[in-house]
Length: 356
Image (cartoon, rainbow, N blue to C red):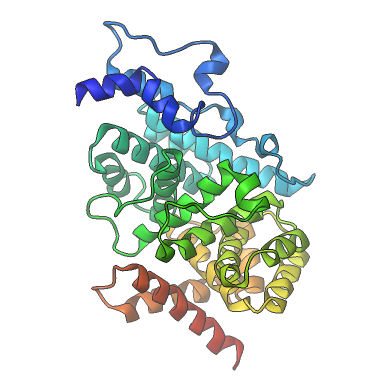
């Protein structure tokens, strides 16, 4: 164990996994930018060297470096701020200063805990600690940000090119499936040319996991096309019909959770989803997002604005659809099929409201 950790800390194994730079993001690592490398020494333990090596470059939050179609205006700042908070949370874990995430504004704090969960997952996997750090994060600082933390855990797996396993010990039986969503987001973020342009699918996924992966990809498309409803609609429409339902679900989540669009643009987004035949999936993604936001604390203005348009309901009502659907599944629900039923029951609530 100590020998393996020493090898990882030296940078040899980690660089091989990350494809030449920390996180496979197309940017050099913070340590490379600073011109310093973790060097073995009697005063620096292997664990500390590993943490120093994994620190993220703040420039990774600049999505224009990835050739995303960023528009001028508010949407550009929205996505940059979300990724800045993610990187801040990731690095807070690496510097053992998780408490600093609470200094982030309430609206950005979930993204900070998403980054923290990604960092905990990476460390747990590299040091073979069976999810200990992630569990401690979920049980402590991130207890009100579980949706974000499970999405972040999936991003951590993607950084190491590993398919999400069952997750941390004592993980939430259904929320843990959000890790596959986070995996889809991060995997596609680092490989946008292939995932968005060529519309490929990772070979390491089973067929059952592909649907939830596509929800993460759908969230990424909202970022990639800078919350432009026409561009996002055209982008989703270019994928095979069998994938578009889950992509629209991811778009609905991101449009509500992260924001970036004005009211008239959100209205056009509903029209695109309806014309594609997946209006209910857009509403379901929205309902999951507002439920996550409400559990994290005060509702951001962009979320309160989005829900009546995307879900055609008040925020509390849309969130209640997910709660009722979860209760209907019973205490034993934990499988991938149960997670899909949770989503389907939520869509039924929207359908009943919409058609009466």
